[in-house]
Image (cartoon, rainbow, N blue to C red; front, side):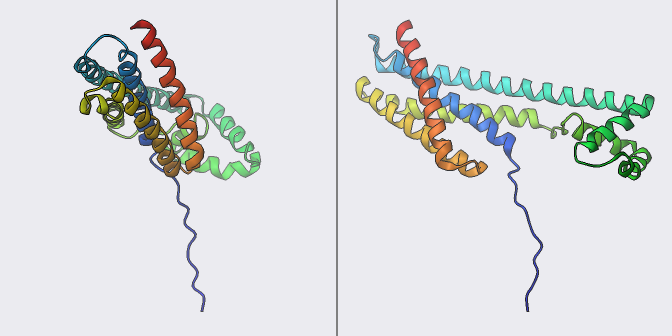
Length: 232
Protein backbone atom coordinates (compact mmCIF):
# COMPACT_ATOMS: atom_id res chain seq x y z
CA UNK A 1 0.00 0.00 0.00
CA UNK A 2 1.42 3.33 -1.04
CA UNK A 3 1.10 6.37 1.14
CA UNK A 4 0.88 9.73 -0.49
CA UNK A 5 2.83 12.51 1.13
CA UNK A 6 2.12 16.17 0.52
CA UNK A 7 4.78 17.92 -1.49
CA UNK A 8 6.70 20.35 0.65
CA UNK A 9 8.85 23.09 -0.83
CA UNK A 10 11.72 24.40 1.21
CA UNK A 11 12.69 27.99 0.56
CA UNK A 12 15.41 30.10 2.10
CA UNK A 13 13.70 32.59 4.42
CA UNK A 14 16.55 34.43 6.11
CA UNK A 15 17.85 36.40 3.15
CA UNK A 16 17.88 39.73 5.04
CA UNK A 17 19.96 38.27 7.86
CA UNK A 18 22.42 36.67 5.45
CA UNK A 19 22.64 39.94 3.52
CA UNK A 20 23.53 41.81 6.72
CA UNK A 21 26.10 39.19 7.73
CA UNK A 22 27.66 39.40 4.26
CA UNK A 23 27.83 43.19 4.43
CA UNK A 24 29.40 43.26 7.87
CA UNK A 25 31.71 40.26 7.53
CA UNK A 26 33.04 41.18 4.09
CA UNK A 27 34.04 44.68 5.17
CA UNK A 28 35.28 43.42 8.53
CA UNK A 29 37.63 40.95 6.87
CA UNK A 30 39.09 43.39 4.36
CA UNK A 31 39.29 46.86 5.90
CA UNK A 32 41.08 46.05 9.19
CA UNK A 33 43.41 43.72 7.29
CA UNK A 34 44.30 46.46 4.85
CA UNK A 35 44.85 48.97 7.64
CA UNK A 36 47.10 46.66 9.67
CA UNK A 37 49.00 45.51 6.60
CA UNK A 38 49.33 49.01 5.26
CA UNK A 39 51.05 50.38 8.35
CA UNK A 40 53.12 47.25 8.94
CA UNK A 41 55.89 48.74 6.82
CA UNK A 42 56.02 51.93 8.84
CA UNK A 43 58.52 52.31 11.65
CA UNK A 44 56.01 51.61 14.40
CA UNK A 45 55.70 48.96 17.06
CA UNK A 46 53.24 46.09 16.79
CA UNK A 47 51.29 47.54 19.71
CA UNK A 48 50.54 50.62 17.61
CA UNK A 49 49.20 48.41 14.82
CA UNK A 50 46.98 46.55 17.28
CA UNK A 51 45.71 49.79 18.81
CA UNK A 52 44.93 51.25 15.39
CA UNK A 53 43.27 48.02 14.30
CA UNK A 54 41.07 47.79 17.40
CA UNK A 55 40.08 51.45 17.05
CA UNK A 56 39.17 50.90 13.40
CA UNK A 57 37.11 47.80 14.20
CA UNK A 58 35.22 49.65 16.94
CA UNK A 59 34.55 52.68 14.77
CA UNK A 60 33.76 50.58 11.71
CA UNK A 61 31.28 48.32 13.50
CA UNK A 62 29.46 51.32 14.95
CA UNK A 63 29.35 53.12 11.61
CA UNK A 64 28.25 50.03 9.70
CA UNK A 65 25.60 49.20 12.29
CA UNK A 66 24.27 52.75 12.23
CA UNK A 67 24.14 52.65 8.44
CA UNK A 68 22.17 49.40 8.56
CA UNK A 69 19.75 50.88 11.09
CA UNK A 70 19.13 54.02 9.03
CA UNK A 71 18.63 51.93 5.89
CA UNK A 72 16.10 49.75 7.69
CA UNK A 73 14.24 52.77 9.05
CA UNK A 74 14.15 54.36 5.59
CA UNK A 75 12.79 51.15 4.07
CA UNK A 76 10.05 50.97 6.71
CA UNK A 77 9.08 54.63 6.23
CA UNK A 78 8.97 54.15 2.47
CA UNK A 79 6.70 51.12 2.82
CA UNK A 80 4.14 52.89 4.99
CA UNK A 81 4.16 56.00 2.81
CA UNK A 82 3.41 53.86 -0.26
CA UNK A 83 0.74 51.93 1.63
CA UNK A 84 -1.02 55.14 2.61
CA UNK A 85 -0.92 56.26 -1.01
CA UNK A 86 -2.47 52.97 -2.17
CA UNK A 87 -5.24 53.27 0.42
CA UNK A 88 -6.02 56.77 -0.80
CA UNK A 89 -6.11 55.69 -4.45
CA UNK A 90 -8.38 52.72 -3.71
CA UNK A 91 -10.76 55.09 -1.93
CA UNK A 92 -10.67 57.98 -4.42
CA UNK A 93 -9.88 56.44 -7.82
CA UNK A 94 -11.02 52.80 -7.64
CA UNK A 95 -11.57 52.62 -11.41
CA UNK A 96 -7.86 53.28 -11.99
CA UNK A 97 -6.90 50.68 -9.43
CA UNK A 98 -9.21 48.17 -11.12
CA UNK A 99 -7.40 48.74 -14.41
CA UNK A 100 -4.05 48.30 -12.68
CA UNK A 101 -5.19 44.94 -11.30
CA UNK A 102 -6.29 43.85 -14.77
CA UNK A 103 -2.96 44.96 -16.24
CA UNK A 104 -1.04 43.09 -13.54
CA UNK A 105 -2.96 39.87 -14.07
CA UNK A 106 -2.60 40.17 -17.85
CA UNK A 107 1.12 39.61 -17.33
CA UNK A 108 0.21 36.15 -16.01
CA UNK A 109 -2.11 35.37 -18.90
CA UNK A 110 -5.35 36.14 -17.03
CA UNK A 111 -7.99 37.88 -19.14
CA UNK A 112 -10.12 40.84 -18.09
CA UNK A 113 -13.20 38.62 -17.85
CA UNK A 114 -11.36 36.14 -15.64
CA UNK A 115 -10.35 39.01 -13.35
CA UNK A 116 -13.93 40.03 -12.58
CA UNK A 117 -14.55 37.55 -9.72
CA UNK A 118 -11.21 38.45 -8.16
CA UNK A 119 -11.94 42.17 -8.48
CA UNK A 120 -15.29 41.68 -6.81
CA UNK A 121 -13.59 39.95 -3.91
CA UNK A 122 -10.94 42.67 -3.59
CA UNK A 123 -13.57 45.39 -3.63
CA UNK A 124 -15.31 43.71 -0.70
CA UNK A 125 -12.01 43.75 1.21
CA UNK A 126 -10.10 47.02 0.72
CA UNK A 127 -7.32 45.84 3.04
CA UNK A 128 -6.68 42.79 0.87
CA UNK A 129 -6.87 45.02 -2.23
CA UNK A 130 -4.27 47.34 -0.74
CA UNK A 131 -1.98 44.44 0.16
CA UNK A 132 -2.39 42.97 -3.33
CA UNK A 133 -1.29 46.26 -4.91
CA UNK A 134 1.63 46.60 -2.53
CA UNK A 135 2.84 43.12 -3.37
CA UNK A 136 2.16 42.82 -7.09
CA UNK A 137 2.27 46.43 -8.31
CA UNK A 138 5.07 47.81 -6.14
CA UNK A 139 6.84 44.61 -5.11
CA UNK A 140 6.93 45.71 -1.47
CA UNK A 141 6.46 43.60 1.64
CA UNK A 142 5.90 44.96 5.12
CA UNK A 143 9.17 45.10 7.08
CA UNK A 144 9.15 43.09 10.27
CA UNK A 145 8.92 44.96 13.55
CA UNK A 146 12.39 45.64 14.88
CA UNK A 147 14.00 44.79 11.54
CA UNK A 148 16.12 47.97 11.53
CA UNK A 149 17.50 47.27 15.01
CA UNK A 150 18.15 43.61 14.16
CA UNK A 151 19.93 44.64 10.96
CA UNK A 152 22.12 47.12 12.84
CA UNK A 153 23.15 44.56 15.46
CA UNK A 154 23.80 41.85 12.87
CA UNK A 155 25.97 44.09 10.68
CA UNK A 156 27.90 45.52 13.63
CA UNK A 157 28.63 42.11 15.20
CA UNK A 158 29.57 40.62 11.81
CA UNK A 159 32.00 43.48 11.21
CA UNK A 160 33.46 43.00 14.69
CA UNK A 161 33.97 39.26 14.22
CA UNK A 162 35.32 39.71 10.70
CA UNK A 163 37.73 42.43 11.82
CA UNK A 164 39.23 40.41 14.66
CA UNK A 165 40.24 37.60 12.28
CA UNK A 166 42.99 39.47 10.37
CA UNK A 167 44.00 41.40 13.48
CA UNK A 168 44.44 38.28 15.67
CA UNK A 169 48.00 37.48 14.46
CA UNK A 170 49.15 40.98 15.43
CA UNK A 171 47.65 40.45 18.89
CA UNK A 172 49.19 37.01 19.37
CA UNK A 173 52.58 37.49 17.70
CA UNK A 174 55.54 39.77 18.37
CA UNK A 175 57.09 39.89 14.87
CA UNK A 176 55.40 42.22 12.39
CA UNK A 177 56.55 40.32 9.25
CA UNK A 178 55.30 37.03 10.69
CA UNK A 179 52.04 38.63 11.79
CA UNK A 180 51.54 40.13 8.33
CA UNK A 181 52.09 36.76 6.63
CA UNK A 182 49.77 34.97 9.04
CA UNK A 183 47.13 37.69 8.72
CA UNK A 184 47.20 37.46 4.91
CA UNK A 185 46.82 33.69 4.90
CA UNK A 186 44.11 33.70 7.57
CA UNK A 187 42.15 36.46 5.81
CA UNK A 188 42.19 34.64 2.46
CA UNK A 189 41.17 31.35 4.08
CA UNK A 190 38.40 33.13 6.01
CA UNK A 191 37.10 34.77 2.83
CA UNK A 192 36.99 31.40 1.07
CA UNK A 193 35.31 29.66 4.03
CA UNK A 194 32.84 32.50 4.47
CA UNK A 195 31.90 32.42 0.79
CA UNK A 196 31.54 28.63 0.88
CA UNK A 197 29.22 28.80 3.90
CA UNK A 198 27.21 31.62 2.36
CA UNK A 199 26.72 29.63 -0.85
CA UNK A 200 25.71 26.53 1.09
CA UNK A 201 23.10 28.42 3.10
CA UNK A 202 21.60 30.36 0.21
CA UNK A 203 21.75 27.48 -2.26
CA UNK A 204 23.67 29.50 -4.85
CA UNK A 205 26.55 27.02 -5.09
CA UNK A 206 29.10 26.67 -2.31
CA UNK A 207 32.28 26.48 -4.39
CA UNK A 208 31.21 29.19 -6.81
CA UNK A 209 30.30 31.50 -3.94
CA UNK A 210 33.58 30.72 -2.18
CA UNK A 211 35.67 31.58 -5.24
CA UNK A 212 33.67 34.75 -5.91
CA UNK A 213 34.00 35.91 -2.31
CA UNK A 214 37.71 35.13 -2.30
CA UNK A 215 38.25 37.03 -5.55
CA UNK A 216 36.17 40.08 -4.66
CA UNK A 217 37.38 40.24 -1.07
CA UNK A 218 40.98 39.62 -2.14
CA UNK A 219 40.86 42.39 -4.72
CA UNK A 220 39.23 44.77 -2.24
CA UNK A 221 41.84 43.94 0.40
CA UNK A 222 44.66 44.34 -2.13
CA UNK A 223 43.34 47.72 -3.26
CA UNK A 224 42.86 48.94 0.31
CA UNK A 225 46.30 47.59 1.28
CA UNK A 226 47.95 49.45 -1.64
CA UNK A 227 46.25 52.69 -0.71
CA UNK A 228 47.15 52.26 2.97
CA UNK A 229 50.78 51.59 2.04
CA UNK A 230 50.92 54.69 -0.14
CA UNK A 231 49.47 56.83 2.63
CA UNK A 232 51.74 55.36 5.30
